[in-house]
Length: 147
Image (tube, helix red, strand yellow):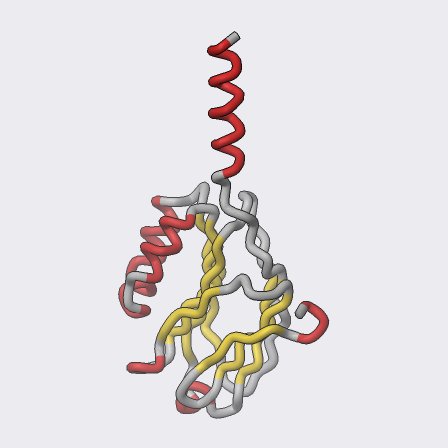
């Protein structure tokens, strides 16, 4: 009986330690006509079920992320999804649905602007989020009805 009780406590502890799912389900993009100095740029939406992997990615520079992303996606195929695109300033892009074949707990956006303007944004503040990409910077905020 004690063994059964001990196993039940371990099971409950394991369930309680599971990170919550990512709150954000849609990412909208607003790209200024002069974004990144009117130059095309890379943007990756990164979804993972592993908070430690998300932290590892955030510890990278954007240049290191873009150099290693294919290798990391292959190495962590069951816990990492990368949706990448090269974007052109001034063009409209539809919302990105943040879904994967695994339970997503962390979401990041890697922005490959030229020089110091490159960086990461962390998703999760609201159900719908808006990434505004300007000439020299970018910002993430809640979007419309998803607040």
